[in-house]
Image 1 (cartoon, rainbow over the protein chains, first blue to last red):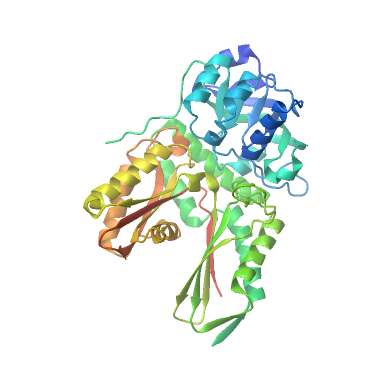
Image 2: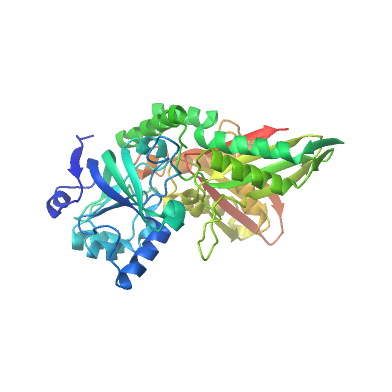
Length: 181
Length: 278
């Protein structure tokens, strides 16, 4: 496989334009966690006129519900959750400036279309590799919805977080099509 | 009649919840290593390497293998010559509560509609069977939501038979693709009633990967499904390759003359389970 591309957040249009399906990426900087319940509440709050808890422009959202941080560690196990459940919300977030999401598994057509229209990418991280990925997270703090527990929105600082470009901004997709006989 | 104190069950349950979530079972670890030798796709191989590295890191750091430490599922075999002093269900739930808290494991149980988290990963799902003897066998599984969501049950017609079963199972795995964290273990429940087939499918997931079904005909069906699933080319995390599944396990039960219940319960590669006999 090719050499990884190093990127820092917030992501810009030119970062996105340089990414193709299958590229390995090492991401550093601040990223934001949100999964099912957090997405629902975030968009409801935005609709109600509230300011989002983080800057959406150039943001990377990580679909993760980490396990609790043991003493002496910033975060517990922290691998990606399955992304399709966030397909309902992703196109709107891309329209508001979000540049990328990190998860695992297939995305629907509406998300793939939004990636092309708003110049975004969908990154895959290795599902289940929660202990491994946790090592690349240097700090974590809750930004919003603390009552949601593992689903709260957190700001994470990551260093060389290992990703693969699954869906790029040109309509490409990494996942293989199963051979059905 | 032997008497077991409910408190002893709580202690054991707390311990196995914690251990199972941090240490991969030997059969799964062996299956990873075996797949590493046979996987032909470079991307698939890289994922397998990461999974083995993850197992190593979880052991070193005490972090759970996966952040989804699951819904706690139990199959309990209670000997008819064994009496539990106290409430067995409460004892198990207390054990889950303690183990998940002590191990810094994620609490993933919520109200189905309000989505409010119960805060302690209870209630557990408990299946109880009475068996001969004076012991109690407790089998625990930390069942993740991502793979559980990719599971399906259906009612086939008797005419569809084995060909219909095969088609449904293979198509389900194909449709699920990368979502349930392949390489998966596929539990198949055939027969019983509408409610019983999924229980059979889940029970099948507890059988060690290196253990075939005791009935050679069912074992042959497992081999046939295993080959067909790995021929799909989905590979580890959907990146392509020949390791889509680490094993297919079938459990079968007689059913109504009109019916052919079928269930597929998918288990991700982080197949965390542990059993203990008291």
